[in-house]
Image 1 (tube, rainbow, N blue to C red):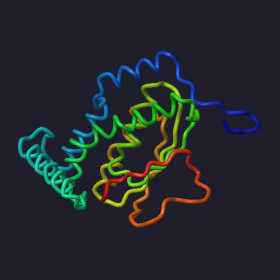
Image 2: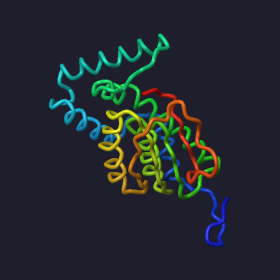
Image 3: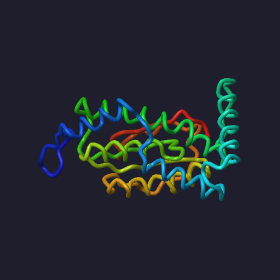
Length: 207
């Protein structure tokens, strides 16, 4: 616990209804409809075609296969082209979103999260971690957060700006999304000294 203005701040409290909603989500995890619609709209904006156009789906599929091939060959995976990021959103992002919701839920369930959190996401990509924070807190109906993000890839940066602020607004702005910083974190040491954030996510994804 920490002291703020002379009072002691306890851990984030979740009521029974919020807990039941989150556990039900874990029973049958899926990308929430409002995030799905944002992703589909972004795909259409980037391609100029319906998200389920056969040509679009084929190009996304090819991008995913190329990424998987490079990954298993332990080669650098690039996200510098539009379809590479769209493939990431379609294939990787759903899994990573649910995984981070599990991580954040464990932190909350063990009484380690504050009612208001500051989260720093390094190598945020298209914003999967912020989206998970937005979705989980919105489902719980309690808690709030500020999210700070850093990303190098221009395509990921664009996707982040299209998806994350809109998702936060759709969930009632319980999560305040700060303007992301475009920077290269590769080869740099992790932040040291005094950090204004309470939770730092460091992605192993390479840009």
